[in-house]
Image (cartoon, rainbow, N blue to C red; front, side, top):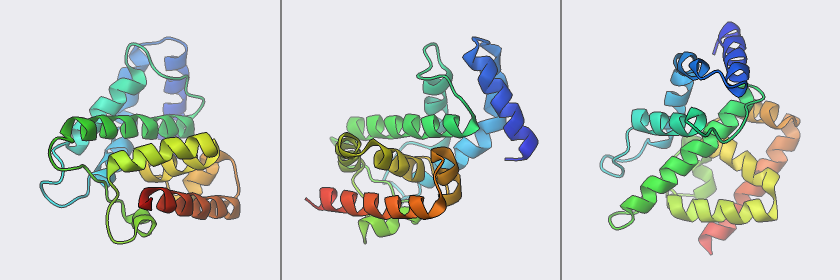
Length: 185
């Protein structure tokens, strides 16, 4: 996102927090591309593994973000993306639960493929493991959410969490190990 678009997004988020409902309509075109790219990265799976399309994921998550009862006041674009990652996680998990009677939903993301070795994690197992991780260490859970569901790079995640890149890398390794152990049982 270009610097001026980031500035516009931050201004619109501030207006949205102030109760300006029109800001939500103006914000969507600015952040849509970024949210669509995140959604697309979640849904890269073998054909037939899911029925949810990136556009539907973006729209459902966006409604959770700016709908009648937004979950949070957004302090910045980075905070908005962090909350968007949580909203997308919620939509994906809800979709997986509805679909559970059929084939289990999984999410393959290139950046975290090593986390789960040769197979993509069952989304519901990942969600349950993240809930346990949040109880154990909320910062690590937030980091995983930003990287996995938010699709943020190492640098972007470090910026959002206001930590150094080396600290983030240490925590990322710890979170991956913890989740691998939890999911493996």
